[in-house]
Image (cartoon, rainbow, N blue to C red; front, side, top):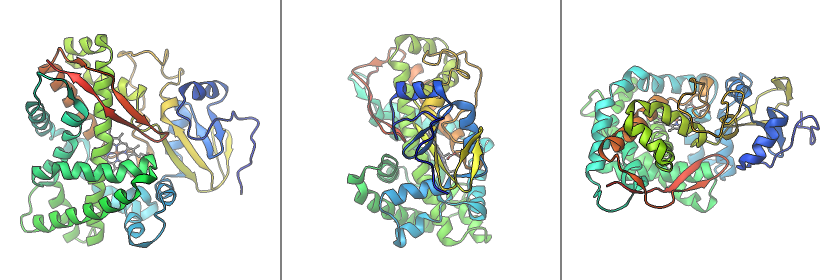
Length: 396
Ligand code: HEM
């Protein structure tokens, strides 16, 4: 069935809009709007229902990103077709369950000391007497070093791993076609890197992530190609997103001295401050799905083949759930977070990401309570994601 061109009962918004005023005006008329790319879910509760909806599939949405990027066939596409983010059904479960086991909250909780050491190590490398860009000097260092720790790779590889994650996810999520070749090259370079690393670990199995995945392969639970796909997925997914969200949280605190003083006075507020910063400036602005059949969302008929975009930006400012939504408040009741997705697709690394953000903020608060912005922090925003391009800070 084709999507009707006009749905007079639903407000119309510009496809891909990042204009909060436009999103808010439409949300006041209806929780779900239309644009020329499909349906746009603007309120929180229908957003959760869309992300959990059994007829709204995620796999095709990641494949759409590849299609739109011109990666439609050949060996590169075949490799992408195997990873958890692009698949559905039994294959998805087969790939997701081992990752979920590695990244479960109990496992992540054991990483606290390692993350703290990594964060303090990165801060030790900074000369606090001059302003510093915390995106490069801190945010980029933490997830890539944690990845090396998790998989028992040499720490010297961290800058390469950070670059590879950025060169794959950055161009794809922002649909920056000028970086298409960089994306292709980084994919193959990353695959070679994880292949060499896995071969080295085979001779010396330990209790790291790579060894655990090799054990799964030896037990017949993963093929050789699937093992490589899993290793590469963690490399790509664990770094870029976390880097930008770390920077966003630090910037959101530092841009208002009252916010910063509050966490300096009571570091116990760091988790609440993190959730509030993520609410107001989520790394993911939109998460989308494909309707697998004619279906319905909150009384709105959704035709098979329609794309359904959940606006995290807009849902996070839904006054029904977040009264006085533009205000920074640390006393909000805990509410379902949309930015990490939901349902059978939700982000497997969200506990790890929160741990990294909390430890970064706590360490800067503890060591540099006088920290303040040394210039404007800047972002590059697309409908899909926000990237922090600079975060100049005077620490001393
Ligand atoms: C702040 C940092 C992060 C953000 C903003 C983020 C965001 C997301 C989002 C939006 C999804 C898709 C959810 C959906 O479609 O419902 C996702 C999936 C995923 N994330 Fe994260 N993520 C972050 C950190 C991490 C980390 C640290 C890891 C790994 C250690 C990770 C691993 C994954 C994986 C494996 C998936 C695929 C799940 C699936 O398709 O079944 N993420 N993430």
